[in-house]
Image 1 (cartoon, protein in one colour):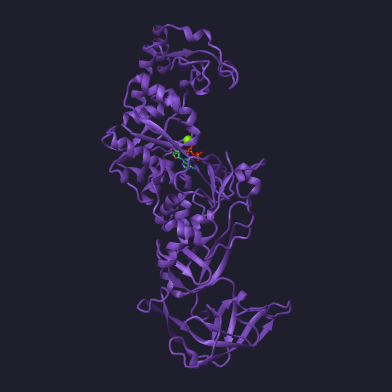
Image 2 (tube, rainbow, N blue to C red):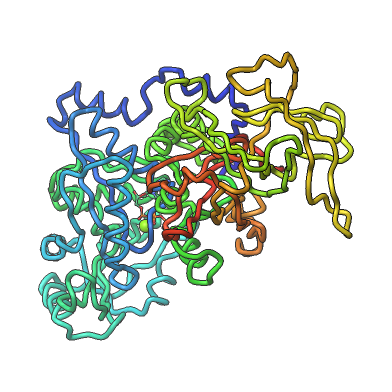
Length: 564
Ligand code: ATP
Ligand code: MG
């Protein structure tokens, strides 16, 4: 894979890119040309996941592409579960895949399963045997591999290749009927053992496998190989443009060979670059290891790159669609910076997420000149600069503020609290720090301030000028919640490309769990509500929440704060 880093950290650059109308991508060009020539009446695409894991953000790219193209050209898309491998598949995965595709905002025209075509595929195989284009090979897997040759040496034709059509028909039927043991025989296409393309050196079409299938049960003990099933399933469904990732380029001649020789609907395969993203891994096999070996809490652990994890963390479907649109359709493998995905989300949440106050790392602030029996209900905006959309927040003598908003010895350009310094409390008053208390270890435990009654937000007649505004919560009114702060799951950009096992690069600090003070309004948070905890990031209710024990996930920070 080329290491063409498509990095785009500059948000102005990104904004410009997103605003630009784009030219047609190469698939749109192909489709428009096909429509112009009248090659197809209707554009039909498919999304063909193997139900052996949860969908990840790479699949989202494929989903947006397949469904997006069909939508654009008034066609339709099938959801086809590519379930020809009985061993790794599971109904749990089928359900999660359907849920994820729907959540992303797409509707499939038909829900199909490759296993629904087992009868037709069997008949296709018989057709090729009858044409003298397929044979039963009794060789061991080792012998078959050895005879296949290498990219620089041609393969060898073995004695089974000369079997008669009748014998092949009989043996294939016996294979189907369970006469032979696992791996004892295979059905191979008779193409060319000297072909430069190794995939054409008599590829295996069917193998014997006594395995229970999640849909067909124990009906079959022979299962078609991917190459024999995929193109034929496309053809059965009259898929016009079968879009897959670049590793299938060398399979295309075989895809065409089967369709040509079976003389069935001419589906065509087109390839694009798979999506790879920094600081994560993008293969179900690796993601499954993270789950099975408990590096994460499950497929939807918010640190995972799965669609279900992004949903749980608080991503919106539209931000993922925008991201997929933004990265375009490449013909060369590349590595997309994860901050582009985060950027797409921030752009959206910045406009829509309700602003609330939460103090993640609290320290107590006492307003010495504020009456201890007094509470004020202050008006604050739910969205910036929207004075019609407000709520009230309780203010009193004792407040929580963020520890990091106070410095005993201020640094240059410090506009927050420090002895003698003044700040505005958001939607409340200007205060001045007069003193502070420390415990025996020297940690600041309490800050004492004076407030200026005439500086009340919205009614400020004080003429005091301050540069900093900080958020706060009233101690007696604040509620509490668990807050989960996430960081990258890996410490290196491309863990899968490292020599050592990718799990050696897991970030040990990818999850920080804290107990925070939150505004009482958050106790009414519902799934699907997105919040900005002012100055702390965007947050979303986690499914682990229970009444009286809420949990919030940080969806994303406010800025790209990742320390390189
Ligand atoms: P993985 O390697 O993660 O298991 P896969 O290709 O085996 O992926 P499938 O379930 O077979 O997963 O994929 C369904 C569709 O999604 C295929 O058309 C595949 O090409 C596409 N796809 C998978 N991964 C990516 C990716 N990273 N970027 C774009 N498309 C992808
Ligand atoms: Mg696959």
